[in-house]
Image (cartoon, rainbow, N blue to C red; front, side):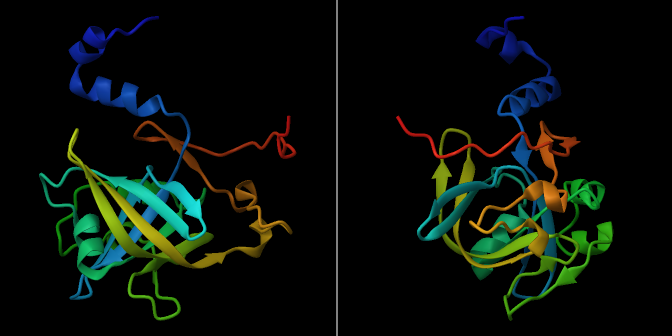
Length: 202
């Protein structure tokens, strides 16, 4: 099967969205925890979190255009703090529900039954049920003019994880904590590790 640019553009909007969103393969599923200066909490599932560097520890994510209210992005800019909470098998349905359009005053934590957790006096809420989570301080955002999205960049300050995932060399066995991946917009998957390979040399 061959999809030309013309054929892709001719697809119905939702069909095109599903197709293009699936092309990048398995992606991490993360819940972004924020709150505004009034203490209103927000929780949003994001599948675009990417590693940007370990020295210093930087992480990025793509946020959608601000043509409509984006409470997560607004809270990050307002407070400079957010948490990233990996989704696991026990909470993926609740995590998916956070993608619904809730009003500013409605907390996705309350709506989905997930539990807020505040750790080490950090200003943003964590998801208690997440087995791997970390606090992030906002560093900068890059506006992508081509489609109006924002690349949000932050520095990781604290990491909290279930010890069963941590290997002696720092590697994290995400399968051990039942982390799930997502493809497209709504398909969730568990992983099946093949093996770890040695560092590649010529």
